[in-house]
Image (cartoon, rainbow, N blue to C red):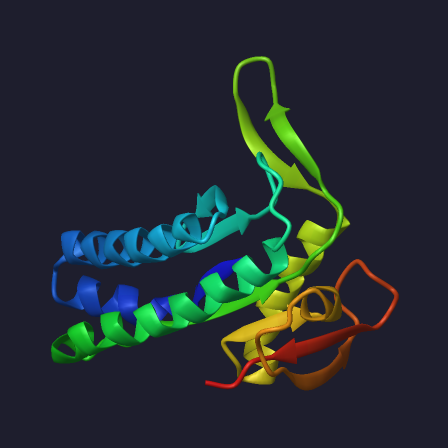
Length: 180
């Protein structure tokens, strides 16, 4: 999960400048750039929820290094966001994001009703990834990775942030980040 943190000031900027199209342009540019990175790293974009991107790896095709590729995508997104923010400096806008990554078993397939369905992913591992993204504000970081993901990757140095209990779970979850 990747979501813009502090979207209101960005929205207000364009509202106060009577430029709603400008807001759409910035969000679409952001979503285009980040989506390309997900796809280039073998991810599947599940959906957009406003300015949030939900993506997953290892389906529909098996990918042995799915955790590694998800983390690599997050690092590339971080770098691309820096480029985008440099381009937005003249408008006094800075986009900050939170990314949550978890690795685990899920159910993937076509889900919905008889009139509308989506190829999507559900399960406890998905819920935890969403909760980790939400913890980015609490830990003042742009990236939180679960222990499950960290243990399946080898190319990064992780800093342990601590252990948290997230909504809907009773057990403590060890969380990590990668410093810039």
